Length: 339
Image (cartoon, rainbow, N blue to C red; front, side, top):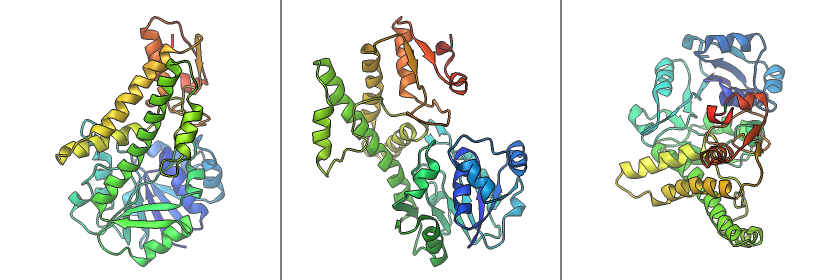
């Protein structure tokens, strides 16, 4: 067992911290949101993320708003929000968190927040570890339990205590250790490649639907080739949510910044947007439901939801459309869809 200080325990951070705690580690959490921390201290976790509240209650953690409470000798994991900005990702909250832990008594600092390539190198220290997660809100604990590959950015050989820590939480998962900038690019690239698969499948599906034919047999055949694979290669709603669209755009920004070309991520994005138009053109009925960014998600998130985009297009076409969904989802919808 090792001591872990976790900085940033919002939707994703609390789930990851609770998962680590369930693996037998002593977890101390720090967040600047005093109201949220007080609720956590009272056992009110207020999360709809499956299993998170149960794990947090069963494997107790400690909470604070004060950076001076970093546990001496602990592994410090930072998972604060890095919102979208015109340049890719806004690092202001992450930089504030790094300033808070700088010079602290931890033995290692791990950045788990998604960052724009080059961020870790700009910190002018070789001790930072970059380790982003590949999880979906609504399935975080389930995704963490099934990790097979761990992406790590670090200059040099990874310390043995860190290797042992990852083994303790991810078992036999393979650790892919590379230079920080390479890992930052790899994180964005993996998600961007998935957006291309989704957009390609929907492009073929839209074309065959226009011909009055079903794309499923064709896509199943294409996906049966092991070089392609069937996962994320079906005809349906386009991609959305807090990760895929942002990582796709952030990769495009990086490619332009270094003087390379970004045709593929741009094409994936433009195809995804056009697919919403095709969905609207062929929409049959006047009621839409399940407006979350993905199906069967218990957490209310409509960020870049493809169904929301399609509903807005229907409205712009003068088509009557009524949204029927959970109250917490309805409150998040654009005002044009609430009437």
